Image 1 (cartoon, rainbow, N blue to C red):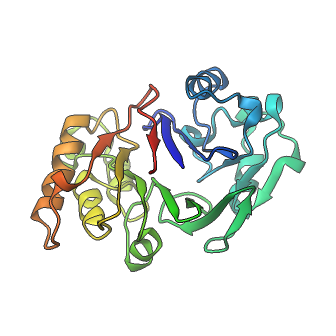
Image 2 (tube, rainbow, N blue to C red):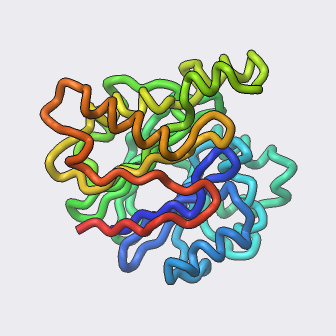
Length: 266
């Protein structure tokens, strides 16, 4: 299996997951042109896509969905309430209703040789979700936009071979930054975004011997820095009470507006 962030951040998100025969995107929150260029840099023609999975209806996850879907007619998968919210987003223009397929948390299904298992997350959207993908014994998780996590989250993400996980903000940068107070409270709340520290704490509960790659994603441009996210997450892992250290696992930070390094699961 393969995983690659085409873009990941508060200004736009688009993640590729695939096998030799199945190619999908998680969110299209960037322009059609950037999505096309990102796919082509991976050797994939946009017309080869089998599905687009939408996590939720916020603009940084769907802004390019209308234009892209009208050109390529790719099936769009999301929860029922998310589909309704997308249909009500005037900025996207008209999207063929037949492209929409609804999903439910914890009800897995297959697309060609790939199994997809949606999961619940806590975020201030209609009915947000994250996605786990598997091919044979290989498993990839793509999980962003969660204000908090619990035992359900941990159970869903156990046993991943690769995981793209949100590390949205540094709490101190957010608190002293220029955002208005209500927005700061929203981001810090249980239906907001995962901080660097909490990302590291969640990862500490998910580490196992066969975990091959960790990707930190959805970094805030105003309230985080790649180096800070990386070092904070490493510190949380090292200070945790499990038997692992941060150096035991390759950790990379997804680029906000460029295609990141392609990850291939062995």
